[in-house]
Image (tube, rainbow, N blue to C red; front, top):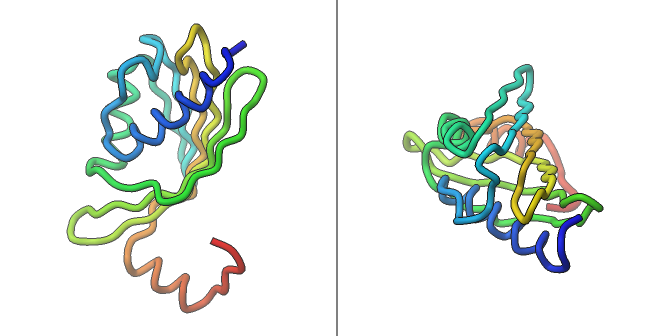
Amino acid sequence: MPREGEREVLASRLVAFLETGSPPEGLFRPDVFCDLTLPGWRLQSVGVPGLVALRRSGHPDPGLVPRSRFDPTPGGFVLEVEERWEQGGQSWYCREFLRADVEAGAVGRLSVYCTGDRDDARQRRHAAEVVLFRT
Protein backbone atom coordinates (compact mmCIF):
# COMPACT_ATOMS: atom_id res chain seq x y z
CA MET A 1 0.00 0.00 0.00
CA PRO A 2 1.52 3.35 -1.05
CA ARG A 3 2.31 5.87 1.69
CA GLU A 4 0.38 9.14 2.02
CA GLY A 5 1.37 11.57 -0.74
CA GLU A 6 3.56 9.01 -2.49
CA ARG A 7 1.15 8.42 -5.37
CA GLU A 8 0.89 12.14 -6.19
CA VAL A 9 4.69 12.49 -6.28
CA LEU A 10 5.06 9.44 -8.52
CA ALA A 11 2.27 10.67 -10.82
CA SER A 12 4.01 14.04 -11.28
CA ARG A 13 7.29 12.21 -12.00
CA LEU A 14 5.48 10.02 -14.54
CA VAL A 15 4.20 13.14 -16.33
CA ALA A 16 7.80 14.46 -16.35
CA PHE A 17 8.90 11.17 -17.94
CA LEU A 18 6.21 11.47 -20.61
CA GLU A 19 7.38 15.01 -21.41
CA THR A 20 11.14 14.33 -21.47
CA GLY A 21 11.57 10.64 -22.25
CA SER A 22 13.96 10.36 -19.28
CA PRO A 23 12.68 8.82 -16.05
CA PRO A 24 13.26 10.86 -12.89
CA GLU A 25 15.25 9.10 -10.18
CA GLY A 26 13.12 6.68 -8.18
CA LEU A 27 10.10 6.70 -10.51
CA PHE A 28 10.34 3.06 -11.62
CA ARG A 29 11.45 -0.12 -9.93
CA PRO A 30 14.47 -1.64 -11.73
CA ASP A 31 12.26 -4.57 -12.85
CA VAL A 32 9.28 -2.42 -13.93
CA PHE A 33 6.87 -4.15 -16.30
CA CYS A 34 5.05 -2.11 -18.95
CA ASP A 35 2.10 -3.31 -21.02
CA LEU A 36 1.29 -0.85 -23.83
CA THR A 37 -1.89 -1.20 -25.88
CA LEU A 38 -2.18 0.75 -29.14
CA PRO A 39 -4.89 0.63 -31.79
CA GLY A 40 -4.44 -2.82 -33.29
CA TRP A 41 -1.15 -3.53 -31.49
CA ARG A 42 0.27 -4.52 -28.09
CA LEU A 43 3.84 -4.13 -26.83
CA GLN A 44 5.56 -4.97 -23.55
CA SER A 45 8.83 -4.25 -21.80
CA VAL A 46 10.64 -5.34 -18.65
CA GLY A 47 13.12 -3.14 -16.79
CA VAL A 48 13.78 0.58 -16.92
CA PRO A 49 15.98 0.49 -20.07
CA GLY A 50 13.31 -1.51 -21.90
CA LEU A 51 10.54 0.87 -20.84
CA VAL A 52 12.59 3.92 -21.89
CA ALA A 53 13.34 2.28 -25.27
CA LEU A 54 9.65 1.48 -25.73
CA ARG A 55 8.71 5.08 -24.98
CA ARG A 56 11.33 6.60 -27.26
CA SER A 57 10.46 4.27 -30.14
CA GLY A 58 6.99 5.80 -30.30
CA HIS A 59 7.73 9.32 -29.03
CA PRO A 60 11.40 10.07 -29.71
CA ASP A 61 11.14 13.82 -29.10
CA PRO A 62 10.24 15.70 -25.91
CA GLY A 63 6.72 17.05 -25.66
CA LEU A 64 4.11 18.44 -23.34
CA VAL A 65 1.31 17.04 -21.23
CA PRO A 66 -1.00 20.06 -21.22
CA ARG A 67 -3.81 18.19 -19.46
CA SER A 68 -3.88 15.32 -17.03
CA ARG A 69 -6.20 13.81 -14.48
CA PHE A 70 -4.94 11.88 -11.46
CA ASP A 71 -7.02 9.40 -9.48
CA PRO A 72 -5.56 7.33 -6.63
CA THR A 73 -6.25 3.61 -6.42
CA PRO A 74 -5.62 1.36 -3.42
CA GLY A 75 -2.38 0.07 -4.95
CA GLY A 76 -1.27 3.06 -7.00
CA PHE A 77 -2.97 5.51 -9.33
CA VAL A 78 -4.42 6.15 -12.75
CA LEU A 79 -3.60 9.06 -15.03
CA GLU A 80 -5.54 10.27 -18.02
CA VAL A 81 -3.27 12.45 -20.16
CA GLU A 82 -3.21 14.42 -23.37
CA GLU A 83 0.19 14.60 -25.05
CA ARG A 84 1.48 16.99 -27.70
CA TRP A 85 4.88 16.97 -29.40
CA GLU A 86 6.73 18.02 -32.54
CA GLN A 87 8.32 15.41 -34.77
CA GLY A 88 9.37 15.41 -38.42
CA GLY A 89 8.07 18.94 -38.95
CA GLN A 90 4.57 18.11 -37.70
CA SER A 91 2.57 18.63 -34.53
CA TRP A 92 1.37 15.36 -33.01
CA TYR A 93 -1.33 14.54 -30.47
CA CYS A 94 -2.56 11.54 -28.50
CA ARG A 95 -4.58 10.68 -25.42
CA GLU A 96 -3.58 7.96 -23.00
CA PHE A 97 -4.88 6.21 -19.93
CA LEU A 98 -2.17 4.89 -17.59
CA ARG A 99 -2.59 2.61 -14.59
CA ALA A 100 0.40 2.42 -12.26
CA ASP A 101 0.90 -0.13 -9.50
CA VAL A 102 3.21 1.16 -6.76
CA GLU A 103 5.55 -1.31 -5.10
CA ALA A 104 8.12 -0.36 -2.45
CA GLY A 105 7.85 3.35 -3.25
CA ALA A 106 8.18 3.13 -7.05
CA VAL A 107 6.11 2.15 -10.08
CA GLY A 108 6.44 -1.61 -10.52
CA ARG A 109 3.83 -2.14 -13.22
CA LEU A 110 2.48 0.26 -15.80
CA SER A 111 -0.43 -0.40 -18.14
CA VAL A 112 -0.86 2.16 -20.92
CA TYR A 113 -3.81 2.46 -23.29
CA CYS A 114 -3.10 4.89 -26.14
CA THR A 115 -5.57 6.25 -28.68
CA GLY A 116 -2.84 6.29 -31.32
CA ASP A 117 -0.79 9.21 -32.57
CA ARG A 118 -2.54 11.83 -34.68
CA ASP A 119 -0.58 13.98 -37.11
CA ASP A 120 -1.51 17.49 -38.35
CA ALA A 121 -3.81 16.20 -41.10
CA ARG A 122 -5.75 13.91 -38.75
CA GLN A 123 -6.13 16.71 -36.18
CA ARG A 124 -7.44 19.13 -38.85
CA ARG A 125 -9.90 16.52 -40.13
CA HIS A 126 -11.11 15.83 -36.62
CA ALA A 127 -11.59 19.56 -35.90
CA ALA A 128 -13.60 19.96 -39.11
CA GLU A 129 -15.85 16.95 -38.53
CA VAL A 130 -16.36 16.72 -34.76
CA VAL A 131 -17.63 19.11 -32.11
CA LEU A 132 -16.12 18.44 -28.69
CA PHE A 133 -18.12 19.70 -25.73
CA ARG A 134 -15.16 19.54 -23.34
CA THR A 135 -11.42 19.38 -23.79
